[in-house]
Image (tube, rainbow, N blue to C red; front, side, top):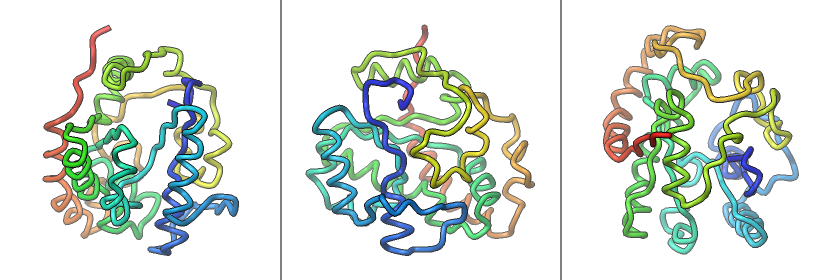
Length: 231
């Protein structure tokens, strides 16, 4: 969405609410940017102010903001919400590799599902759900279907980019080392632990409990996944 060039793309603005303003925990690999707004109200205002001049795409985590946004009906109605889901068998080991102190809440599938239900209840429409596995296996087909659902043009050239991270991602560059060397979306390894530097869910005893907790929420959302479109 950043490569399209026809909208402003904001990368996890509510991260600063959860980890800085609320101080829920110390996030490894975060190089704080003092220019970023940190309160819910200021971040919300920044997004809406940006949207006054051009369309805005916001990529964020549901657990950062679920305790505020559920009651912010006006904000929810002003957005078209999309939920990008990923199999927790893959999510949990990759998160644990970068943050051994990852909490149950940070895995995120439950927060996603709770907000998915809330958005659907407020808007009267089932929100768009994209499975990360579809995106990795068929980037063009998945993005083509997504653009149709959003009623925006599909731009094939946006599936490729130059190596290196966007300047606005520098504060979280430690979380995106693999992306920094990429030029497009690539398929995930066949085995969840492959390439992760760890033995999957067996990396620590509690990770299996995390998986069992979040798997039902993931499955409920996957039942609504958007099917990739043919070319």
